[in-house]
Image (cartoon, rainbow, N blue to C red):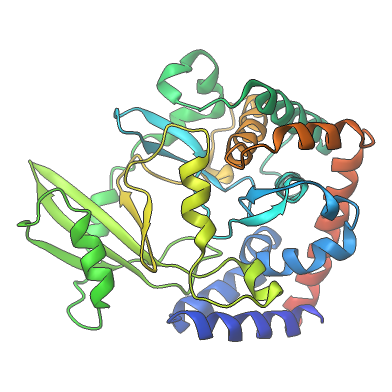
Length: 358
């Protein structure tokens, strides 16, 4: 099927699984038409569809519980149980059993796209080499959790200074109107269960965020506690786009919790699933890190190395797969990642051009 047919089929399937916010979905379409990278981020279902056709050999590689929709904007910060700021993949909505190669190719295909847009300046060949070396070395080491406070000498080069808490974070969140009706009871219970005190007065607002997840319901509970604001978000879960492709039933993603729980990382104690809801703490220093917003003065090689290492940290959650992955990597030609990245990026760009005309 072409991109228009795939989009129609996927969104029909999505509506059969969750309550879709149609105004947010229209906004998503507007953004996707405005830029290739927006389109790339909003159409993982199409990637899943094209991948076996364009990369049949890579599709036979050893499988892991992968991120799925992995790209250069899939990373962010959070506070772990010790209050340390950690960095890594912060979006597991499309986690699914996938060849380990899919995550790596999608990450480097996104690198090609943002390079072409001028948001990064590392040649694709160099970027692929850095990501692949970091991935392999981290697999061999058994993982490398990325805690920013522990690695100041090198992690400052990531552009960490750009992760200063936004001054208007709470102002913007508190300015949203209170929702008094149509709050799903299970969402309300999930939010209440994650607040530090069950006697807290709180109010619930709606939130629109993300790109691939635009259209999903998001409810945020805001309260005053111990002298400051706190917030918890409940986002309605949808199965991975791969479930649409594989025609699997259900209305949840059973791999989301598995992916975050088993990854080698300094875990976010507030990120979890409760029923059909994905729960996380919202705060000024728990944020996705947008590539386009990083300062011009940064070490992109360090940044890409960290991305490759973090992909390995996630894949290490699939126990007993390291030996098979390393053997598979050893047997591949040196340019396999760059070639596949180019092929997939070109196919997505063709789809985008066709989609803009629809």
